[in-house]
Length: 306
Image (cartoon, rainbow, N blue to C red; front, top):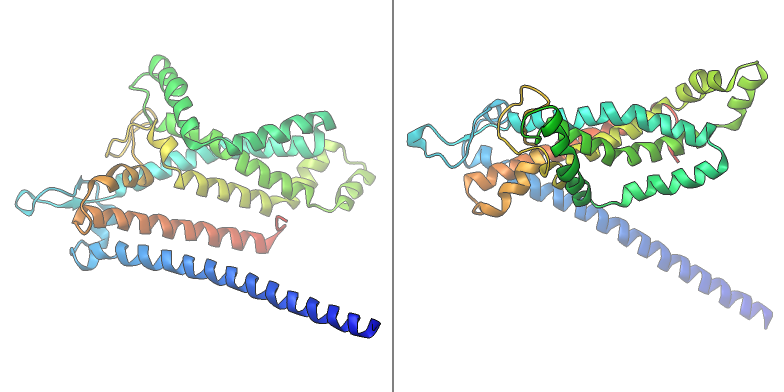
């Protein structure tokens, strides 16, 4: 009787393992198919402008004039996206330059310096920043940052400066969270060895822990840059959305994501204007892939965030 029950339980367990394996495999295949489908769809749409409409890649990437609705008789259409690319780079890189050092300092403080009660306050605060919707960041920037810039620095307030101030706050929790996980993943023996050799806490942090966690910290920075580069709504609300190359931080600007969200709903499917927006989406997808590859390369060379 006991053998029969044991055999029955064994068969049930094997059946459950097969069911679990099948479900996990099905979910993995769905993710792969969805990813491949999105890439194929955006890729096909994105290259239409070069194949069907005859626009040259170099005119698309390096052109600075944006008149997609101008007829041929008037010298059009012109679909240069260089101002959008430079706008995205200006806003995103500036935000990372501000947010990355601050995020790493906060992460070091949370892991190595702050008392337990302070960590209990900081951790929920960082998580709360992560959960705030983009439109809220944009509205705060529109209500606070833009007027401050307009009243104290000049211009209209809608500018590169307003964009990267809002973005630097948005990506701060992303970089901080990854940095905290990286520092906590370091072996405790490294810190103990540094203390045993007479190092102070500051020397241990500066000369042992931060260099050892360099790969994970850079990974967090790249993730923050990817978040900043792909943000649309919050940035769109504060940058002015002027289709021109900015000459200073107080000039209005436009980004790739802002241009896509502003124009996609007002263009006819299959028109040149619509096709060029899909090409801009393909460009964003390629840039995202580059960020992923960079993260993979960095992770293989050092500490991998767990």
